[in-house]
Structure formats: C-alpha cells, structure tokens
Image (cartoon, rainbow over all chains, first blue to last red):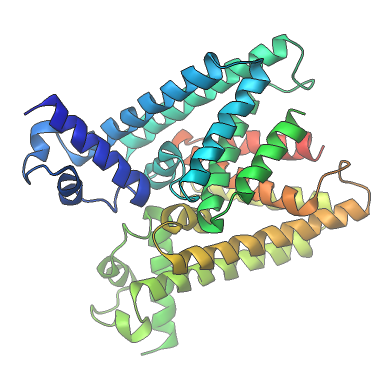
Length: 192
Length: 192
C-alpha cells in the first residue's frame, strides 16, 4: 500500500470517468489503466462510490488551482479575470477536440438522481464554484462595473449553468460554436 | 412480433434511459419492465445502439407535440409563447421532483464522445430544437420585440444551452432555483 499507488488509481480513474462516465467505467478498467494488480482497489477505497467521491475531490483540487491562478491572482480587474477564466477553459476544450466537458457537470447530470451521496457532494461542489464567481462579480459590482439590478449570486449561478449546457452541446457539435455563443451572450449581452 | 410490443419496449426503455442513463440501462432490464420475453429484443431492434436512436426519435416526437401545442399554436405573441414553453417544462420538472432532466441533453452529455452515430443524431436533434426557437425569436424580431443586435439563431442556441445546464444543476440542487434563475436571466435580462 502506498500513497503513490492510490494517487495513480485516482488519476487514471478520474481520467476514464471524465471521458466515458461513472457507470460506464469499471473498477477493472481503472486498475488496468493504473497498472495495479486486480484486487488491490479495496485496499485504497472502501467502495466504487467512495472512489467516485475521491474523484470529485481530485477535480475540485485541480479546479481550485485554476481559480487561484486566474480568477483570484490573475491580472486585471474582476471582469477581465472572469473573462480570462472562461477563455482558459475554452482553450482547454479546443485543445481536447471539443470532448470531455466539465467533470463535475457531467457527474451532476449522470449521478444527481442515482445516488443521494453523490447528489449532495456535487451540489456542494457546484455551490462552491458558484460562490467563487459570485465574489468576483460582487467585486465588479463594487467598482460599478455590473449592469444595474444584476445580482452577483444569481448571475454566477446562471453563468455556470449556461457554460455547463454549452459544454454538453459542444460534445455533439464537436466545434467551438456553443462555447463562443455562450461566451458572447454572457460577456457582451448579460454583463456588457 | 407486433407493433404494440415494439412500442411497449420503446416506451419503457425510453423511461429507464431518461431516469438512469443509456450505458447504465441493460437490455434485460428494459425487457423486464416491458414484460416482454428475454430474447425478443433483437426481433424489434438490430442492436442496443439502434434502440438508442429509436429512443431519440421517440423523445423528439413527444417534444414536437409540445412545440406545436405551445410554441406554434399557443396563444399570444412570440415572446409570450416562448415564455409559456419554458414554463411548461419548469412545471413538468417541479411535478417530477426536480429529477430526470432533458432526455436529449442527457444523451448529448453521456454519448457525445462515445459514439459518432449518437453524436451526429443528437447534434441534428439539438439543431432542430434550436431552429424552432430561432424562428419564434425571428418572429419577435420582426415585431420589434427583440433587443437590438440580438441574433435569433445565436440567442436560440444560448437559451437551449443555458436551460440544459440549469437542468443538470437542478438534478443536484433538487429544487426549482436553477430553473427560476435561468428563466429570469433569459427573459428579464437577455430578452427584457
């Protein structure tokens, strides 16, 4: 048992689940990809559900790095940083061939009705992301940069939702249009 | 072999896939739910993928009825009908306990990367829905009811995307807030 092995199972499993879904990814496939002997999964994780929750945490940690780097410590005013944040992900998906989508959004759609434990965990995750964006919008509001009457909390929720929807559309369109239209509507019409 | 049996398999299968996903639903489970003897599936459908495509068509037909009833033949001007259309689905999901989501949007997210046949079929389906909404928006534009510079096609795409994202969020929030925020942002801010 080593922390390095646990981490390898987690990284490979998170990647597979991101690409093909939670229910569509078997424990055997994860162990094969991580090159870990069959049977050792339960030394590291209590159940597949426990593993799934660790995958949510894994993505949250990666995501927090981007939040810190671009949204909190990035250059420019709040709306400039927010725009850069969305543009970072737009570039990520262009690079990925318009595949994958948001790992948290995917799991919300897949698992929201199937497991109360996942549902609550993912709700918390989405709430956290919304809160971060809400704070940046409130900062913009304080500088008089938000259109009148636009509530930072509601606007943040809407921006996250709209982006998640655009990602699902992107997965069938296999081009940038859904993301570009979303970006334009959010930044030029709603916040513009 | 009867058309009635085929229809029963389709209805039950569409329901199961809507609730729990395509890959998470086995043929045996569908046949059990439809009370059809094991083994008869392949008399009706060439493969599970063929069945999945028939499920997409099944949902499209149901959806077209709503489009006709509310969006095309409903009372009032174009924006009134569009609002009523979104409100119909808001009421549907409240009734369903904030579960399920859009069957086409769910499949787009789940299958967009996994099967080119599904991907193309779902892209067509999403394009069709967007086109219908785009026409209603163009009608509003012709009456001078659209904010200046708002393109009907892009706005329709964005409205569908934002709503799909709100539905994924709803599945983990288990309340109406994501849908209400989306409705408000679309109708009071974007189109308001």
